[in-house]
Amino acid sequence: MHARKRFLCLLFAALLLASLVPVRTDAAESVCFTAVNDQLLPLSDDTMPFWSGGQLYLPSSSLNGTTLGLYCSYNHTSMTAVVIKGRSALTFDLSTGSVTDNNDQVYSGRAVQRSGQVFLPLGLLCRFFGLDYSYTHISYGYLLRVRDSSVVLSDERFIDAAGLSMAQRYARYEREKEAAGTDTTGGGQTTPGTAQPAPETPAVARTVYLAFEATAEDRAGAALAALSESSACVLLTPEHIPEMGGLLRRLAAGGGVPALRIDASAGAEDALERIEAGNRAFWAAASAKTRFVRLDNADGETERAVEEAGYCLLRYTVDYGAGLPAVPRMTARIFSAADANRGSCFVFLGADEAASGSLGALSAALRAGSCTIARINETLL
Image (tube, rainbow, N blue to C red):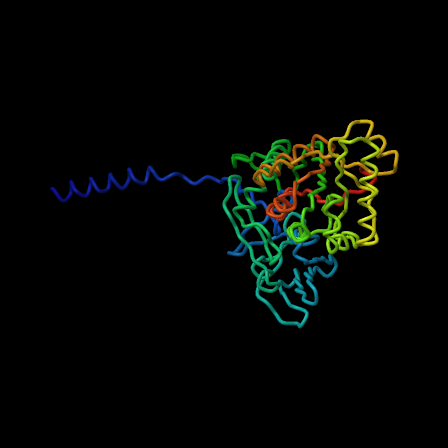
């Protein structure tokens, strides 16, 4: 009797425990962002990476035009996708499911088609082309980040720097899903490929121009190296120019945009004399001159006189001359200022010593937000 009672108690407990196990529902797949090195790519259902058979698949379109140096083309007639980097190439035959390199060596893996896109096995691409990737859980789902040796930010710092851009893209993605009649909570279903997002105003394309002041040749060189681009505007004061022959020749050869920083507190005549003296010193050191000028403490009359003399005045949209905040705060402010200024923002980062510590991370964060870092030119002023 006791044994039967004990059995019934155990059976009841098992049934009760089973009733507490949640029933699985057909929830929607998690959103997956894609980044290449320090650049965040567009978010779309059609190009979203996915797992299949234990393999992570990446759209071939994500490889073109990035810092990875890869190029992918697809031939609809032969149903082959070719990925090239330098002299190395992988050919994916979608009709046979085979993969070969340019020496006809066969590899395990296959390309697949989905939503009109060709997707490639990321593991094979990484092994063959010497890449690396991470797959990180974030607030919106996951972040797939493909990297090579040119990457600047760690995953943690990249997620921090790209947080604003991911929030904006996720909100736009949700709006498009809602407008297309797709239930993003997993309670509804739509036929793949039939949803048409409602028209919306496209996001403003952002272009940023970065500037810093050169106070010493080595420090200015370090700041340019941290940016790893030739787009920075370098401000030169006449008193420092004679000490910077190497930097001046680098700027004259296109390694940056030279500009004169002039104290205009003594009026227009004195300002013009300082500009001419700075250009004479620049010519003596590097056989070059500049028409870009930043006037400090200038009144309206002085600015007009300098412009009438043929010089282009630099006016900052964002001025960090008093000190640089953390990169995420800088990025958010720059994006906001650009959006309020028809997508354009001219940023002064202060002196070279301070700028060199932030330029690499800042430029990576700006690129992560699909923001172009460009050279200032006279037509923009």
